[in-house]
Length: 198
Length: 178
Image 1 (tube, rainbow over the protein chains, first blue to last red):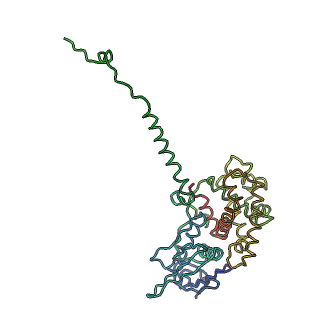
Image 2: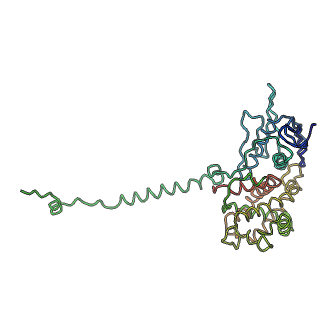
Image 3: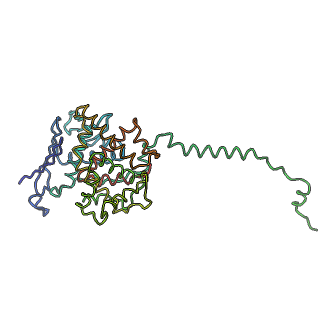
């Protein structure tokens, strides 16, 4: 029996179709085998795809949203993946690459509200207990210091090392100004000369 | 299940605390009854052990170093999780408002009015409760820098709403200091 799950959020509607995997001990209301999905974004072309396309969509959009929360807007989704998302000056661009040869990629412009709607739909898919299809999406992780360098302007980032080098140069110059101790002559030399015993 | 997705088990860093309290303040700026809603949601979600009354909830929020009067004791991990959970529920409740602020489909006039109302309410709350000598507060009160910062806060709230919002927001609050 074919099942379908519907996830809706204002400008986004995602419908997943599939079958229960009874051999894996799932109930008849659980989708264990995903046969296809349809994504409709208000005012844009409706898209259809298979399990790998849905996984690529989630692997691009959910980490992108995670990075946006840290103020980091950078593209997600590799060139060889069916879905990628990148920031624009105003909004975001979702790129869908067809597996059919000679078909140009479809680029959809989303504003911040449409992106939030899409993320909420994908979150529901990820956490739906009635969807037992393994969709591997990386768990959200804190970003490392190296990934957040953009938060500080270049001048502030360089301030500490430049100040350190400057302090070293100044102290070296001051040490160079100190008078060099003169070599001791006379009694000093005699005192240090080895004593020859007969 | 969403909770299990966040691996790190350590208290929130200082910057995370600042952002969390600022986001809760945004919820108050969006909703005049936001303070009451926090107490009500805390009770509804069964967080009365962590925040038995509004004073305790207030005290936890006062760990933010940007506050006019701050408390030295940092919230425990369970208390920080409780505050994030309250923000997640507030963002869910306010989602239609957050969406209308972020949407480019709204008329520019209406959008401008909404943004200026939100900014003026947020700035009133900042002046009332936060230390205006701190750089982070001054940037939010600066007429040139404030619009972009306010947009980032609203976008953060919108992406923190819903089922996956808790794990996503918690991970971002745990970011390393830049």
